[in-house]
Image 1 (cartoon, helix red, strand yellow):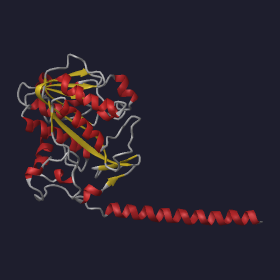
Image 2 (cartoon, one colour; image 1 turned 30 degrees about the vertical axis):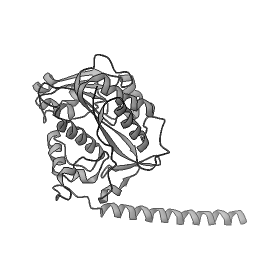
Image 3 (cartoon, helix red, strand yellow; image 1 turned 90 degrees about the horizontal axis):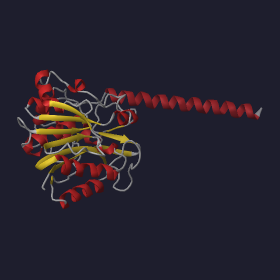
Image 4 (cartoon, one colour; image 1 turned 90 degrees about the vertical axis):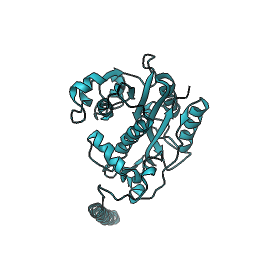
Length: 312
């Protein structure tokens, strides 16, 4: 009799718990519906000189006219997403460097379905688009999600550049980022977008950036690379698995190592949080809008970029 009473009490307690969970879910859903997501055009809330002056993803960059201009070059709609920030970061810094021009040579690692080769090809640059060997693309799950390519048809964006110009200016090659082939050399610029955190270890990713500068660039050439950045901790992080997260101290170490080897590296500065969306964290299952910061395991993560000119 007493066991039956205990079971009944447990059912009542579970029913109340379900009711409270449903109530919380309804409140969250209502909050999402009442969430204001601003869209361009934006007022000029910060001086134009501040555009992309920080190394990490910042809402302020999205609100600058130049951000929309570069979206226009890519024929990409505006979204509050850190991946779009990465592409704009790469394009902006490579254009500012002056290395993208007719006849210049560019190299991209882990190209996936990026629009950047088409953008640079439209400007007359000769681009070698590379991605990992197919075995790596399949093991990492990149092929299933469309983040891996093995031919140029997947990055031929005819709304950006004509097929004839694209085919004349862009070629494809397999490249293991942990073992860059010696024939990939004397480029004017190179880049990668959130790739080197997948190379097996924090050290492997840092060594890739060094190799990408020293093995593939001519002296004076520019490299721009983005990766995952840990905002939660400068001590604990994800150091094993398919996706690693670099801490402030790791990026500072990479900058110091590059400078010690004679290269010129843009100052590493974490962007201040000044806009509402700088405090918004996308949590699993991700909505992706907005997606400037996300929870990756237990760490708040965003995108970080590094800009390097080969010095010797």
